[in-house]
Image (cartoon, rainbow, N blue to C red; front, side):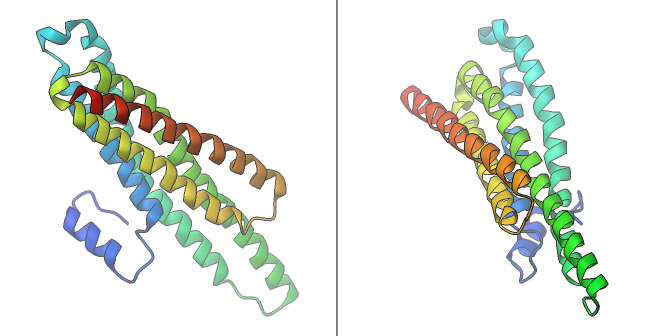
Length: 208
């Protein structure tokens, strides 16, 4: 659905159209990709500098990790779009007979669960990047410290945006245990992501 050869302008034009895809979930994944790209840049600007020789190996690991995650977040754009389409397709199933209605209802539930799991995976992956971004920003090239902070901000947006997509799907899911588990994870990640971002933001402000 999202071509690697597609320009940023084309992607934004598609987002701005009256089509539901790409939507907020895709944009959340894109924010994750942007966050990792910025953090990778910061790490790369640190590697090879005498001033930062003590953290060079860690920065190399950080750059490699961010590169890998950037590709995964890019793939997540399509995954989220696909999950949304699966839900819409389930709603289009026939519902004339009781058997068709039961099948349709079951398909909607399964598709909606899937549409909650995909953004939860995006949110978890973005959440897992926060500490690495924090470390890279605090210990990397000080000339790019604001880039590291913006990386953190974009990553927090990826977390919170993806979790909003989880929550909107949970409202339609009948499996109470499934809903309870994901709601608990949402609450924890939301609170922690905002704390981590705020802590780094305040630290960066004091360094400027």
